[in-house]
Amino acid sequence: MNWDDTPTDTAAGTEAGERLVDAGAAGEDQAIEAALRPKNLGEFVGQERVREQLDLVLRAARQRGATADHVLLSGAPGLGKTTLSMIIAAEMGAPIRITSGPAIQHAGDLAAILSSLAEGEVLFLDEIHRMSRPAEEMLYMAMEDFRVDVVVGKGPGATAIPLELPPFTLVGATTRAGLLPPPLRDRFGFTGHMDFYEPAELERVLHRSAQLLDVEIEPDGAAEIAGRSRGTPRIANRLLRRVRDYAQVKADGVITRSIAETALGVYEVDGRGLDRLDRAVLGALLKLFGGGPVGLSTLSVAVGEERETVEEVAEPFLVREGLLARTPRGRVATPAAWEHLGLRPPQNAGGSGGQQGLFGV
Ligand SMILES: Nc1ncnc2c1ncn2[C@@H]1O[C@H](COP(=O)(O)OP(=O)(O)OP(=O)(O)O)[C@@H](O)[C@H]1O
Ligand SMILES: [Mg+2]
Image 1 (cartoon, rainbow, N blue to C red):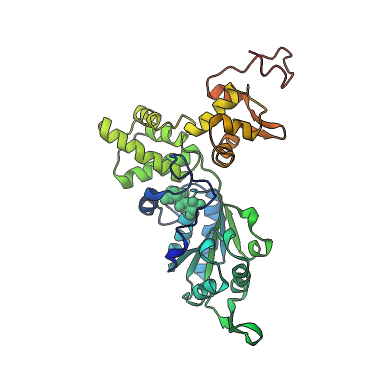
Image 2 (image 1 turned 90 degrees about the vertical axis):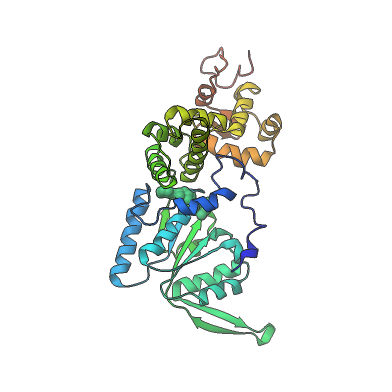
């Protein structure tokens, strides 16, 4: 009901929505994602541990005829938190109410939602780390005692009227579990941490999605796309759609390895999932600064991007891939970075001498 709360609210400050390998959901994604979302735990690929634990939590609650414990899901964008919250509701045969931290600015917003929940309903609170402090405090009591205090009136005459809530299951999602205050974190009966997916798991996601999109994909084609998807199902599904376009326009529609390779080459997503920006940052670090160390500002100027873009958009994946290291003296390329860009590191005369000679020809 709070549609007007969301539009102005951009997530991390950087506008990276146009990148094919961005893990966030851009316009086109949202519609298609609904169609590709697994509907039950059995269809949900990977995350074995979280799935098994969650399966026990839900099964036990069902056996007891009780409402499931509150669940916190944490993990990077595009790994399946929203999907899993919907699965929780489906597995419990319960309706789901969806809202997000930024949409709840006042405790009153939360009180309105909580007091209208049906018994057993799942309340999905996305980006729970971005809720306002007063709302957060109201949530503590609601989660623990299924009660809220509704304040009526203002000033000295204000009175708090306690309101009983029906038992409900809160499913909180966050990309930043570290930002949650411990009292909130402690009130969840189960916390599932989602990791990046293995290539083999992404291949399964791709085969499943291809079937739903009615596209023919060969195992090699799926492997090729999976390897470039940065461990993220959302990116895998997005790359799949672009490769499908290419296969349809330039070939017979079947996604083979070579079609996937060529198509993703056209979109400048390389064999490891780096895009143009990632390669520009890495390329500058290697070619202009001999592999570093070089300061973030200098590196950003060299690639003609904002500091924040380099730091928040490009670097996290480069660090995760072991291509770049952030050190107190600046950014440093790893041997894998030289190899990935097909360049040879400068020979330093001293052998193991670390940094000296880096700028030599
Ligand atoms: N385990 C999975 N199996 C199959 N598909 C998946 C899985 N996880 C995610 N997906 C697909 O990836 C897409 C993105 O997942 P989802 O929206 O749940 O991510 P999220 O963690 O909520 O991301 P955000 O942090 O941006 O909200 C979904 O549309 C779904 O199709
Ligand atoms: Mg989500």
